[in-house]
Length: 245
Image 1 (spheres, helix red, strand yellow):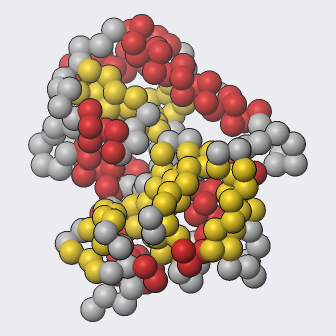
Image 2 (cartoon, helix red, strand yellow):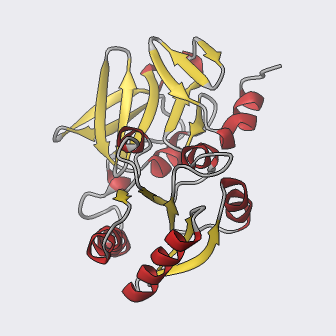
């Protein structure tokens, strides 16, 4: 099954170059090309894709602005001529970073890595057998705690002790006051288990405990010395849940 994607790139020749690589690989289906963030977001509001090829510097909003506005988490491959965005790319947990001009071999390496991840996920058995993201956390709706698998042991965490969760690609970091734990899972899986009275997703990479919020300044939430960004696509929900007037 091919990976569906869109190309968000303001330079037509660069987009054409990338489209040819996609077609040559026979692994990627290009659903569209957009010259700016606004048009790309309008498309993504109507249709979801598996992957975004995303430039950073474009007229108007940047590629990182687009990531802040997403309400779901597709795979992201940044395509840029500058290395200075590498740290930001790491912060946004992008799946790969293709520095222009890149070769077909380098492009194919990035795509094959994503394809292998898809195959592993598709072939994973139900959670009754080998470890998988669904197995690393066990909880029931009427409990005030959960167990996460970290460092080869099951750790019991009280939900109210959790400050926030952060996506780290195929892992999730649970942050409590003074300590953090990393478990093999996805933020989407955690969202299905935790979103409710005290937890809210505020960014494509973060879920926070409402009870632990100290204050909000601009687009940043402060929780006991920690800072969590609010994504543009989550602002309305955050405002409604927190009764922001």
